[in-house]
Image (cartoon, rainbow, N blue to C red; front, side, top):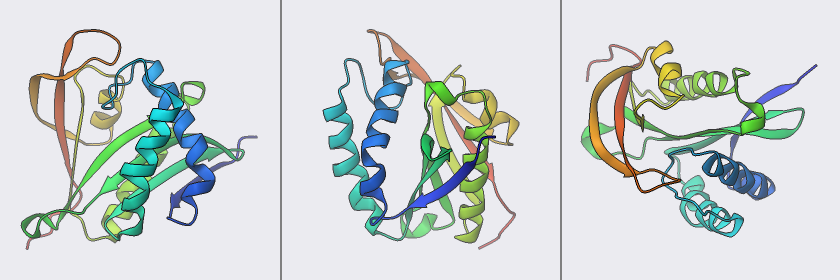
Length: 180
């Protein structure tokens, strides 16, 4: 029986998971995930990214790195960033939903997203935004969870594995009707 655990990492718990997070990022990029990186992509590059871009943010109060483990093994992660300007304190951005290729199609991404939404509500956020490569396999997941398409931007990012520019779909989800 699989034991799934969802955890919010802190600056204290991050170092234990950093090697597995680097491996997760490399595996996703190698499988063609459009998550800001292009191939070839090394473990050293992944480690550098986690240590320079994410680890420092874990010391703040308006950023979260959530992970899903299965029987103690890292299977997926997602980030919630709500370090927004003063006129946008009601919203957060979903970033880098990563599921290891070995753990896909088991509902982990949805569990992580639901956990992220619970955290967003606890933080009194009423709106979540995200972007995903148009036509990517995560797009149906987001739509099934109530995210709405705000628009599509053509030629937004270079494909991770070839010289092609892909469109991105910008999405949002209203978590409540909170009026400010």
